[in-house]
Image (cartoon, rainbow, N blue to C red; front, side):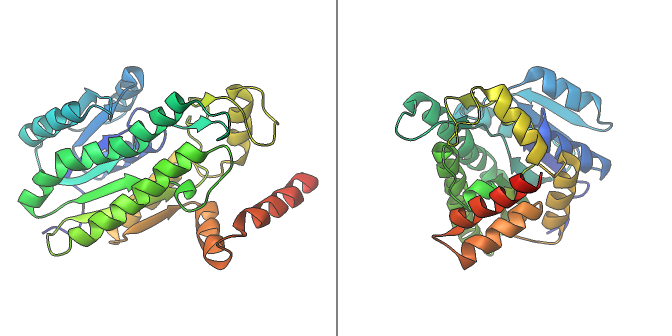
Length: 276
């Protein structure tokens, strides 16, 4: 069993932008043949064009279980090396309060963020178990560590990814396959600009463009830095990877103040806003 994913085939969903795109580029530079999957065909082509080396490009809706199964069969036949990594990373969000939420928007988030991960694991896990090696990395979030107002569906989906992956980790003991959960903090991606929007809890924003502009100012970690943290964490054998100083801070905060962490966050935000 190899202890490194370098040089092995990597499968990445959400590879058309953001963290997925950066991870694909980084792993390709470390000798990995990469499988790029995303709903955004233009983004996929941009990622593929930036990579030298073996690339398989697939337009994929992660909600489609049969599509994921077909992709796994295609990858197994195509892969020029063992599958070292399956990175279930595709994700979306909706900004809305619970009281006036659109159930359809909540379901959209849950179907992509959680069921998309489950579909990816279901499709690729038999291959990894057969070869007795490989890593399944599932993207949760800092919002899989803390609850945040007007992000109930997103938090629910990311807490679910965390619990699912941690349970899977226990099942995989002795198999040679590892399960890793990734908790990004504020990473400069287009997740907010692509969000569905009804309202934000402070009433500061009237549309998704305004919310995206604020997110761009507070997200401190670049996708390339996030990819480096994720890659190095997997190489070091970590089962839980916190991406960015805000993820590390909030992880520690919720342990210290499990029912009061949001009060502390609001006070800290107030200090930052007064100082800006």
